[in-house]
Amino acid sequence: MPPSSIADVRVLAFDVFGTVVDFCGSIAREVEALGLGVDGEKFALAWRAGYLPAMQGVRSGELGWTRIDDLHRMILDTVLPKFGLESMSEEARQHLNLAWHRLDPWPDSVEGLTRLKRKYTICTLSNGNLGLLCNMAKRAGLPWDLILSAEVFRHYKPDPETYLGVADVFGIRPEQVMLVAAHSEDLRAARACGLPSAFIHRPREFGSRENRDVGDDPAFEFRCTSLVELADRLGC
Image (tube, rainbow, N blue to C red):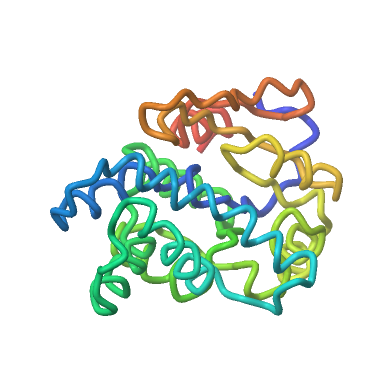
């Protein structure tokens, strides 16, 4: 039975990168398809490693509001020389940067979301920008009721404005929105704003590199190994 603390939940808000889609495997696939002669997984992880510092530049005010597409491109331009790819053409850089729009879902994602949607309103709460999330959903068949993004709130997670913004969009209380994510820090920030939490363990989020985030915080209402398991536990 679901915990009594989520009895009033009406909306499930999902982190996307790593939780719903496999960013590492997908970026590695795109890199290797280009025949660049580099290790696709190492490239993907190096690109992703620039994400938090770049985003923090926006959160701190060092940078003005900058969409993730543009942050990804800034990071890409710094990563390419590290792999001996500084001569990559502008056209190729633009194509590769849009790989984040073409990420593959985890095998359980579409089924799990489809089932959860029968009982709850499901939406994204991602730092990805709106165009990226829309293109990704179209390609991957992700059945969102609504796409919400940090771009809507002009704040990146874990700023409280993102989590509270979802409740405001739907005109409900924070405790009626549950965040679903594969990242404990994201869930803790949401809980600090009054949202219940569901951790989804993604051991392959970083490819062959060990994922040490196992969601062992006893405060989380749920800890699941897939979105299908979450649907089972929520009676969907």
